[in-house]
Image 1 (cartoon, rainbow, N blue to C red):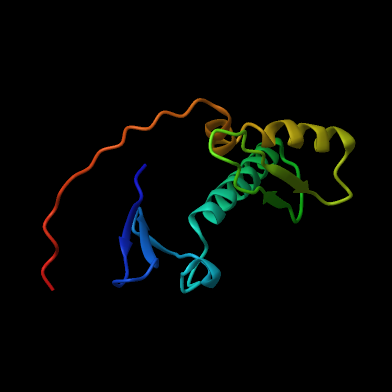
Image 2: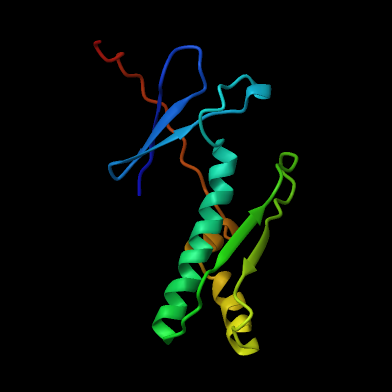
Length: 137
């Protein structure tokens, strides 16, 4: 998997992120010097966990033949101090007609989504720096 961020204009935090031919706009809020043209990278992290969790439980329900109806996942977290534990609050919202057994199974399966597993595992970074000539305009 690969994501590439490109600055949109000089003296701006606005970036276009390209992923498999899709484009997202990322920025910082006005109070942090941005133009607020898109979510922050940290908000995208919360969005990744929320969407991955939702897709994971919906895929599981489909395999089981369960008709869940509308499902929502809300993720909240705030930036911890460097080196401190990051805590995510993940809330699954399912319709009231889900049985207690289905609810428990979905709760367990939600914690198995790929983004959840990535965040709870050990992460190693391989940072590199490459000097490139500016693109001709």
